[in-house]
Amino acid sequence: MTTSFKPRRVSLAYSGGLDTSCIIPWLVETYGCEVIAVVADVGQGTRELEGIEEKAIRSGATKCIIKDLRQTFLDEFAYPMAVTGSVYEGRYLLGTSIARPIIARAQVEVALEEGCDALSHGCTGKGNDQVRFEFTFAALAPHLPVIAPWRLWNLKSREQMLDYLEVRNIPCAASAQKIYSRDANMWHISHEGGDLEDPWKAPPEDVWMLTCDPRRAPDSGAEVMISFRAGFPTAIDGVPMDSVTILETLNRVGGAHGIGRVDLVENRLVGMKSRGAYETPGGTILIEALNGLEQLCYDRDTLQWRQQVALQFARIVYEGTWFTPLRETLWEGVKKAAAVLDGDVRVRLFKGTASVSGRRSPNSLYSQEFATFGVDEVYDQTHAEGFIRLFSLPTRIRALRDASAMATKTPRTCARTPTECAGQVAR
Image: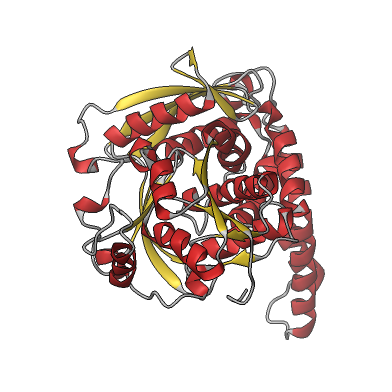
């Protein structure tokens, strides 16, 4: 997209931060268009949302539309992702990634409702988010052009952007001294920039916002019991709650015990590595609990299949290719398997760790009668011999073949015949 294109009305994903505060007047001045600011409430907190509509209008927007997407975000995006067990590169619980499809979808919905003829976002040309937003745009509104100011304008630094707003008398809470770039939603908060750009430096304590230092967490620890229905959480400590309340509760309890801190150097989709610090207290507890429930309810083949799907699903979430037939197909399979994930899981929280301490389910495949080391009447241990012989049969046949071939090729140094040697291996 070039500045020669002249849209009449643009739908902008608006956060109220420095970037999008600059984008609104830039769009108006560059194209002479109206700007519809779309604010997606995915649980980033009242501090970020307070006064945001007034701020957008003062920046030059024609209208600011705020959409409360918190429950939808959890029920349709974050919780299904958790049920698939998706974790990117073994550590990242995909908090920023999973929010992009729902934000972009809301932006498209507003664009269609308001008669917009273009879409815009504040993602930089170095990051993953530009791909995630524009992939969703392509899936849901391929006819709408996309304006990406970071790939067009000549504002190259934070200082230049602050000067840009000051000249236009547009208020912004940002400052040139801002250390970290953060992104928050109900599932997590991410931190990048500042000292984190040096992977040798440990994250300073002022990075973290949701979790306490695990070393300073209560010595007593805590336990929380989560109830599930088909893999989705329904209650905490026996008290039924809606999706939002469950995660808010787990975030609060987990954060108090230092749960969910991750310091990661990851491989970005655009080809470079980046270092980020992530806090996902509630999500960490939920995934640990789901793993505990799977141990009871999934047979070995189903569990291993789900683990394989998790790698592919995590990549889909990370790359922002949510609205695709592949993602829908994978989810239908996982959802079918997860129909048995009913039950309760008790999770122990202690100084930064979350570990399952108990699990129960009406669909449990675990049988104490079969597993006991004591006397039982349901399992005859002598049957194991036949099973082992059949299980190892391909290896046994291969060993017999190799022994016979070696005996034929090697000069004889003993009185045993090749047949006798093979018989010894068979025994």
